[in-house]
Length: 195
Image: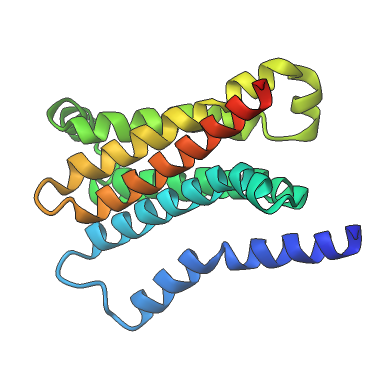
């Protein structure tokens, strides 16, 4: 069984690199459109949300399918959330603003979507740092409390997307609906545990 789990984890890891491969293909084929920087930024921003939803879905999937193995992939998917969120942030700081910190500061003050996006990344940082087995053993129950920040991060991520898009908010609302369903399922799991 452990042998299969190792191969499944490796497969998930390889599949999780698709956003990097797909953007490389798009860049190579020169299909970035009129605003290449915005295209790249949004590409990694959307994949951050996708991995957030995948991470949040592991506990409900375990409950629905009665298969405990789903939880084994949650940590890796969560680290990919941080990985793609960090690339998204680096694209904003490096490609968009060329590390012009005064301009970045002014943009943060001017646009609320930048504030919530940056806050979401800041909250992801302690989750990534404490994702090792050693930190789980060291923090014990505090680790579970800390990692509940993922729900706050999901809300901030969706809000960041809604405020960023402004006009046609159909796509951000789809993510909002998915996150809401996952929250409801999670609350149902907690309620059943208490019964």
